[in-house]
Image (cartoon, rainbow, N blue to C red; front, side):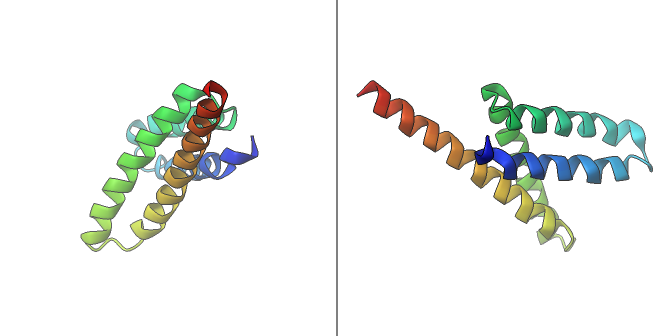
Length: 106
């Protein structure tokens, strides 16, 4: 369970930031707060579908953060770094699981 603490932490941080943003427009940000919390719990418990969805979600968020960063929104650099760390953590976990399954099959 210690292997995915970083990805779960990134998702919890995004939930906190989105909940802060929901004070301005709750209808836009509250579904993302719920999604971040559900994914953080699923990743923490190493639920395979939650890990796959979190990988896609963080990948899309990283892609958009890079575009915002290129447009001059420099605070999105923090989001891009955190998303990169979360994606790296999830891909490392998936590669480790594939390696273990390959060793068991041999």
